[in-house]
Image (cartoon, rainbow, N blue to C red; front, top):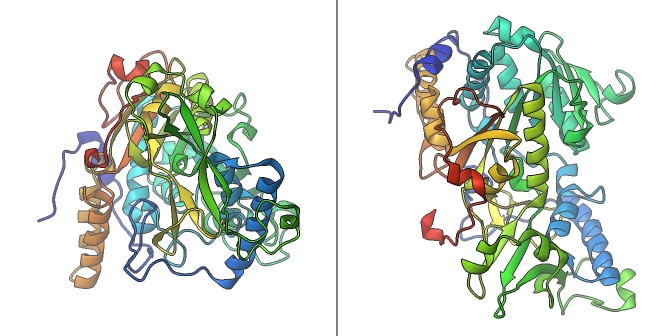
Length: 484
């Protein structure tokens, strides 16, 4: 018997409108999300030689900066490791899926993207069915989620007709090409002109979904927000990859910042020959700042950080997430749009969640920068506080509860009927459903938060109205791992 959850009547009606299901290919094998690892006692796999080469160049680049200017913040290390043109992780584009380092919910099952599409259709109607909208995805990965959303949107003609453009915020040239091929069809090398050629990272293209234009941006602020119609924004596993600062409480009550330095036994450490030396034997380590840094003084001003933590406790803060959330909230209110944030994390301050993920296993995040994904749990209370007075935030609620309330079991039933007596396909569909919804898999740690215009209005489905306490300040709490 498939475990069920409460369903909203309207969402179930929208899911039933998906009649005529088809099953698309999914990532295969024993795969890990960025939160859960499938590693064994054999340890993480070594990166391919091409990745090792790029990593060596980036390793030397990071080492040279440290030698020249001193230990760098963890935020700077993450930013360079993930997005540097000198071998940054996301520049190679093959991070997601069975052949990559981790798998995301849209890659696990089409049901995830289909339920997200139903959520947008339902709340587009609740906002008065605006005639003109744009769909925006932050960090769209391989383009699987937005492709599923547009595919399902065709089932709702008025909603589909309102979508004037798709905006994808993506810095990686290789991921842009993968997204373009999925949304617009493969382009032969040399075909097209300028930005749409296969060998060049696309800037604009025409989708195979009724010719809806697709535009790529490095940053959210590159979108002309004043001119764009009502935005429908998706941030799926976006905030977890933004650079964080980490701090440690000192004996005197102040906070030291955790920095990244070259390890003492690395080749040519802390001398002038380091700039010309080999990066192959360079290792990095965490060190603590001797004094209070500007970041600590600015980010930990809330008195709760002083009163609720003890000597040796760690705190992770992501100011970039707050900046983007504030910007997003203002846009949603000014243009009467909506956003859905789906990510892993908690509704309180995070402490020691920074990790590396490579080949579906956890790895030392300071080992071979550029060869793995770097990530940290999201503090949803921090996002909600960043949107204070700019928009209304609802949630977070657990992903399993969200998907059940929106009718994922109805969609599963449709797909099971569509495969007839094919037992292997039936088992595979149920396994993927459980992966998304089970509290011991992705159903609990992954959470959803909705953002709607300020000024009142209906509470979005399936969320509850926020409490006044939750809106007043970040939920600065010392929570042990057992609280997860």
